Length: 332
Image (cartoon, rainbow, N blue to C red):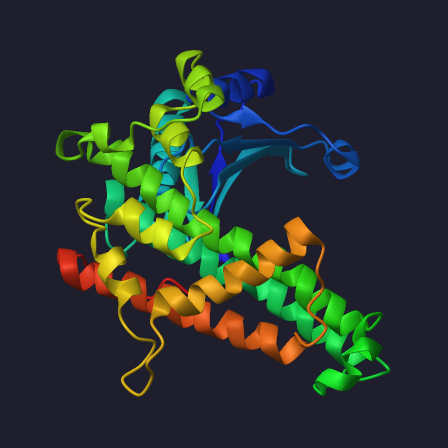
């Protein structure tokens, strides 16, 4: 499923001119593979260019139909944002304006797409995109963990005095390994929100508070390899709950993250969200830096941590929309 449209070039249009035009308006050619060679198609995509308002690639495929009509098939995914379909509409408009011809979209002949999702920009778009990517990326960790647990012939034990029997159990190893990838997804969520906040709120952020920048990162920023905001982010920790709170404390739009992590997991719990998050970080650190496999950490434990972080990110994004009066849309 997705947003699809097919543009029909007028008779006599040269294929090389159509392909060259797409490159002129910013599209990049996808390296051909066996399928594209056999079907004689040329694939294009519009690079995201770090635009947080985009979630879907805008693609175009140029080929010749059986009746010798030259066409360009355009597509974005079903989760396309307002900005994604706006860019898709722009491509269709530019083709029609320059070559003539017509197109047929899901809405009809020469009918442009109408995306009713909120038109987000800047920090608002970055927060939605970060939540979307995290909540959809953990699906793969959950699937692998469940698949391995079901396939394991010997089920692991929770008894500590028998935990040594778990050391070669696939589900225990997968749970420990899964934590590494899982924590990377958490880190990417917070880091991407942090970078975008600095980038789109420069007039409201005093960068002097982030004086400590790693020399290597600063040098890369000077050379134009990365942005200054990325250099700052790479010099700070996003795998420590207290550091995450400090990173966001007092920042415009997202200072709420500090307050959110300081609260308890639930009204019936005495454990703060930051402390629960830190336990997940600590397990990852022990595994990566000390090569310690937690033989009592089972598939169910990883699933519990995934569900906790899923609720954490979901609730955090919902809270950010309330704090900033942003329109809410479920990012899952």
